[in-house]
Structure formats: C-alpha cells, structure tokens
Amino acid sequence: MKRSILCAFVLGLTGVEALSSSSSFKATTPSTTAAAASSSSSSSSTAPPPTDSIHKSRLEFPGLPESKFRHPLDRDLTRRIQQLPGNRLLEQGLRRGFPLLEQGVRLDLLSTTVKVSPQQLPELHQAMVQAGRILDFDTTPDLYLQSNPQANAYTLAFLNRDAPPIVVITSALLERCTTAEIQAVLGHELGHLKCEHSLYLTLGGLASTPIRNVPILGPRVDEQLRQWRLAAEYTCDRAALLVSQDVEVVVSGLLKLFAGTSAYDMNAQSFIDQCREYDQLLQSANPLVRASIQRQVRTHPLPVRRVAQLKEWSESVEYKDILRTFGTDLDETTKKIVDDSSDDDDDEVVVD
Image 1 (cartoon, helix red, strand yellow):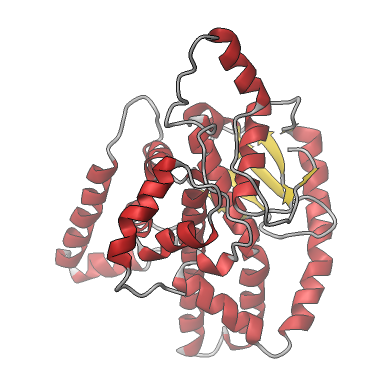
Image 2: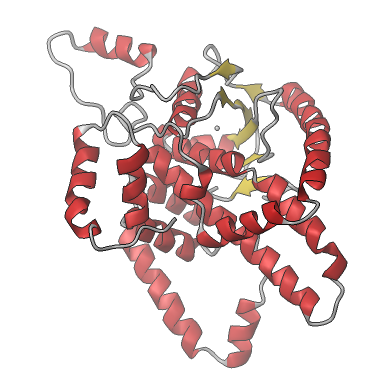
C-alpha cells in the first residue's frame, strides 16, 4: 500500500478547482444536486440529513497549520529535518524532481482510471471539494477512481505548486464504505498532502544515508525512520477526524476495511477492548514470541492501535482546541462539543 514514496492509506478521494485562501470561508453546505432532490421529494417538510452524510454542517479550519494536528513524533522529526544544514538545497532538488514523477503518474491515471469531476461521480467530487475546504486547501486535488479488488487509497503526498495534487481511491473501497466514510479516507489522504510526507520522509532517508551502515547507530536510525512512517499514519487519521468531525464515522470505515466486509455492524468500543486484550497477551507472551512480534516491519500501525489512538485524540484537549481556535461557523452539535469541554480544559496544557 505504500508504493515507493507513495503514502498509501490501508483503511483501506475532482477536477481542477481553485479554492480561495481567504480566511472568510463559510460552513460547507449540501450540493445543489442533493438539495434539489430533497426539495422535489418533500415540499412540505425537510428532514435533517442523516448523521452518516457529507451534507451535515461542519467546521472549516482556515489558516490551520499542519503542525497543530501532527502526531508528536511526526512533528518533531519533521522539524529536525527542516533545521538540518543543507536541507534547503536537498528540498529544492526534490521539489524539481517530484513534478516529473507526478506527471508520469497523472498520464497513467488519465489513461487507465476514471477522473472524478462535477459531471463524473458528482457526489465524490463534492466530498473531495468539501474535505479540501475543511482542511484549508487552496486547490482541490484531482481524484481518480481505479479498478482494484483491494480497498485502498493513496496519494503522492507532495504539493506541486503548478498542478493539482493527485489522490486515488479504488473501486473496492467505493463498494465497501458509505460516502461519509470515503470522505474520511479523503481526509486521511489530504493529511498526507498537507504534511507533504513524501517530501520529508524522503529527506529524512537521504539525510540518514551516511550513517545507515554504521554499527549500532545505523539500526537505530532505521528504526526511527520506521517509527516516523507509522506516526505519519496516526497524523493522517487525525486529519480524517478533522474532516469528518465524527469519530464514529472514521472508526466505522476503519473497521469495515480491517474486517474486509461491510455486511455487519461492528462496535468500536469492542475493538478498543480488543486492543487492551492484545496488550495484556503481548506482555505475558513468551519473550521469543514477543520479540518476534515487535520486530515485524509494518508500513502502517496495528489496526487496534489506530482505533484506540484516534478515540483518545478525539477526546483530547488538543483536538478540542483546534475546533475552538480555528473552526468557523460552529453548528449546534459542534458548539456543544466545544462548550462541554471548556470547563475541563482550563487546567490542562495544550500540546503545541
């Protein structure tokens, strides 16, 4: 799922559209198509949109810096790379080279997939536009639908100043998840883009090359880079939550993909309990078994860890501070979330 420098989303998404960078964003609203359908079906009364819908009112976050929702390890290592001597020269070289890779990928996608647009799969297009606005993107990424039996999504995780970013979702993901859950997946991929994970993880790999073969130190550096890649996924789960603003929607999408089916309802709390069961068993396991498990190389965090960490962050001061500080046009539900946390937050320290 991580293709070379592609940052993929195991949770296993329209055309070019410039968005204003002004801070005077308005709350996202239903698409005109959905509104027209609603009015034609019931002229006397309009039922509220379902919870699992991209049409519910939500906050947008104009001016939100990616550092505010990065996982601490992701944030710290990114800053270290940015402060390294010679980093600017390396970064300029990569920024010149990435567009060539992106151009090849774009040509391949245009020839083999379906490009989403206002005319082609308009609900997916609306989901992407809305997600981009929420996370304060100036330009809406190009979204492509790819035929693939594996439920997945990926992006180049690089912001090209001269062309819209690229995000790809697979047909299996579309079939398994609701539109709201797919939009959460979009939020995850936009998190990779906003953080430019491909750029900084590549810079980290290049910067560590001279010491990769040094005994003792080399393996530690490799492990640090591996942990950074995992932390980047936690960062993007947080971006998914910022887009959805409903942890149950994000978790529901995750569980469907971890289980490989959407045929039955699944319980998020039971899955978190499963995480505790895993930790207890790991602690009591034979040392050889435990060491073998801990040495496994993964491109993404363990599913039980992802859900547990996301639930924890959704209840954190850090998340509520983002809603309160950067959010515009609070609806009543979100106001309640923020207001209920205000009294409890006074004595707590916000992670910067």
